[in-house]
Length: 267
Image (cartoon, rainbow, N blue to C red):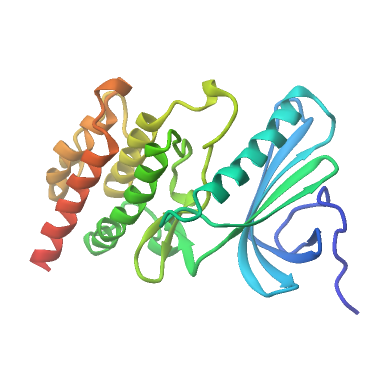
């Protein structure tokens, strides 16, 4: 007997469940996350999935689902629709996620996003702090991520949700965003801009090196890990509490690229 498929997009999202979106069926895989709104009138669901029909492929699903038509729920549906339109608009840019389809349904919107042969940073690189040889992989993959983010910033958007679980490392070592985060969200208060991406990326790298998140003010990474003293001048300016004092992403990218080249030269 064939396993049952939850027919409605509002069906239960859990690892191992099967859902049907439009004409396609999907098997949900880890990770599956469900983020309810504070008023529980809507939720945002994300999951890695295997598309079963009409073609077999790995995808990333993002769904906004409304239980009641409140302003917050309508905004969530509109935000995700705008996210899909932005992905479609930016699909020619290298490194950014590629939209396969947007599936509207009563009370929900789902984005089906192509998933390359890749795993998240924790899945591939393990737990922080990373040993030196793993850090070398991280430096090698950073230029691709920075290029994707710079393309987003140049068009007036920013990711706004950079974290290890939201970044993929491909089989050829590139690090790429899994989705567009909060780009195109309608609420400007929830979207601090490109300077937040600079800070979030620096914080991610700081934790990768030291094993802890940066404080305020951050302890220089070289004090926590002497073999990382070269990062003090790279990461500390990007962690400045004043967004206007942080370097642009292009400058941080150049310094990370220089670090990668320097490390490759000594291997």
